[in-house]
Image (cartoon, rainbow, N blue to C red; front, side, top):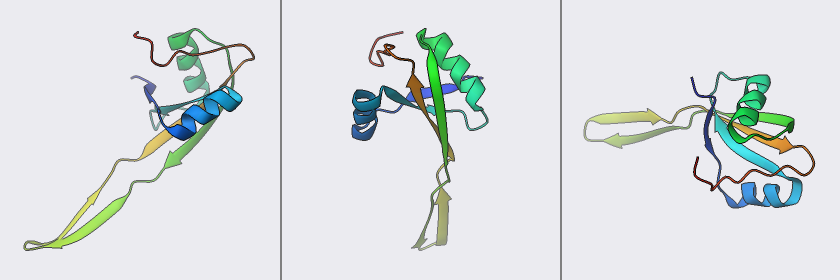
Length: 96
């Protein structure tokens, strides 16, 4: 089971990286903060100071068609914001 799914690349994530040295990752929904911390330290070779997580609920959409009401939903997501120790940097765009 892979804990880290992918890094989040957005304007807000890049702003937090520049301002606070925090990095955002999409992670497995069943992973806890300790597992996320160990996975980031193992994958990138850095020292993690703090981990904040947030769970996004699935989005449900419905539309009326010829066949009736069609309902769909997205998957539940969990995002982790990792704050690194002073002086640590992760190069997200580097090829692993």
